[in-house]
Length: 226
Image (tube, rainbow, N blue to C red):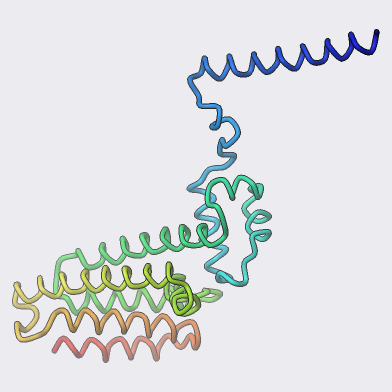
C-alpha cells in the first residue's frame, strides 16, 4: 500500500510540474517547439569561426567533430541550425563571398582612372593570398575543390562569376563614358577576361606564392585596356 501511495505521489508531482511548465510557456507567448530548439550560440560569431576553419582546411579535411570541438557548440545545436556539414559549409562560403564582393565594390566605386583601380584590386588579391600562412582565396579554393562534383557549389560559383563580371563591366562602361577607355573595347569580354585573371592569380598565389611574378602578370593583363 505504501509503495502504491509513493508511486501516485510521484506521478502527481510530474503532472503538476508539466502543467506549470506549459503555463509558464503560455504566459511568455513562446511556442513549445521553440523551447526545445532554442539556439545555444551566437550564429553570426559561430559562422565567422566556421569560415576560418573551412578556409584553412577545405571541406573534405574538416569533419563535423572538428567543427563542434573548435566552435564550442554541441552537435545537436549545429544540426538544428544547419542540418549538416554541407549546409554549414555553403553558409560559410556565402558569408566569405559577400564580404569579398563588398571589398571589390568599394575599390571599383572610387573615382579616378580605371587602370590604377584595377591594379590595386589585383594587388589586393595577390597580397591577401601570398601573405605568410595564407590558405589562399576561400572562394577560389572551393570552386577548384568542389564545383566539379557538387551542384550547389557549382551554382554558387556561376553566380559569383556573373556578379564579379557584372561589376567589372559596369566600371569599364563608366570608364568608356568618361573617355578613360576606348569606346571600341568590348566591356563584357574585358570583364570576363579580368575575372579569369583574378582566378588565375588566386590559384597561382596559393600554389607558388611568387608575389613579384604575379604582380608582373597583373600588369600585363592590364595592357588589355590600351
